[in-house]
Image (cartoon, rainbow, N blue to C red; front, side, top):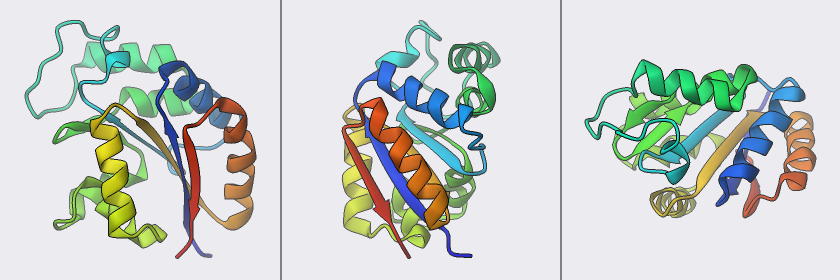
Length: 162
């Protein structure tokens, strides 16, 4: 079965969290949804006012607060985000980026049909404060995610195929 991806970009924390809740209620799992956001994201300030900038995983207090704020299975993924460079990542993309050689953090999404130029554009958007939800699956699952996410106010919503 072919794995494709849908990337939803959010510039608003409230819309981003609503999107996570919508996917969670539709039974999307942390194996299908990756979360990418900048480590200095203003939305995280409420979780940890004295954020440590060292390149390690966020504190247990911060991750517990993140999962409580988001709730559900995907909220737990948000709470278990890992710092990679200037970005926090969770979900299947984490394993891919850990094994990626060069090409930047989102270069790992090439296997889902996202070319280097598009991946670099998304990386720049995350550096500028955007939050990304990346949903992977077959065409039917992605069509479901797309129709749901359209209602949550994404800045952009794109599907990529291998």
